[in-house]
Image 1 (tube, rainbow, N blue to C red):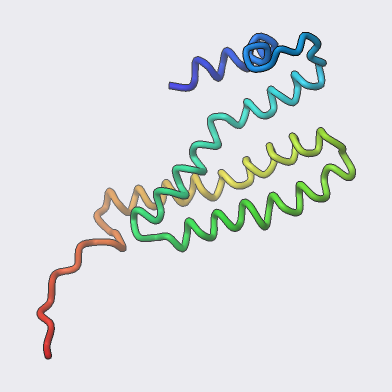
Image 2 (image 1 turned 45 degrees about the horizontal axis):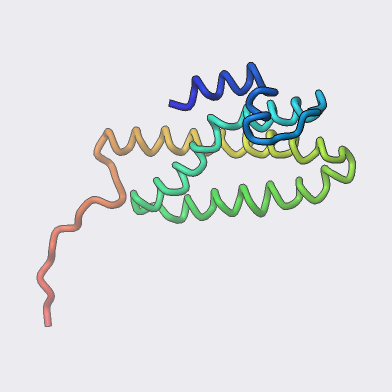
Length: 134
């Protein structure tokens, strides 16, 4: 659903930016930053999907680890250190790097989990009700 808009935004970034901002002068550097951020558009929903999916299949620990890994282990150090050396562009390139590094294990874990679900091997299978002995 988002692919046509994504392609248009990458192809015509000035038109897309002008829809969001009334600024007349957009530098080539800002267009480059916009393209970097828009390149992540197909990846970001996958991260949100994984963070909601794993608790739904009773594997919330994986979701918590992924969330902490991305936000604290990756984002915090990169966003504090990279801008010192690369300036504002460090924020954009750092975000790109973090999202790519984060999505690889997420994609592998999702593929593995869907394989397990198709095979019928799940951690959350309905337990048979057992009588309570008093």
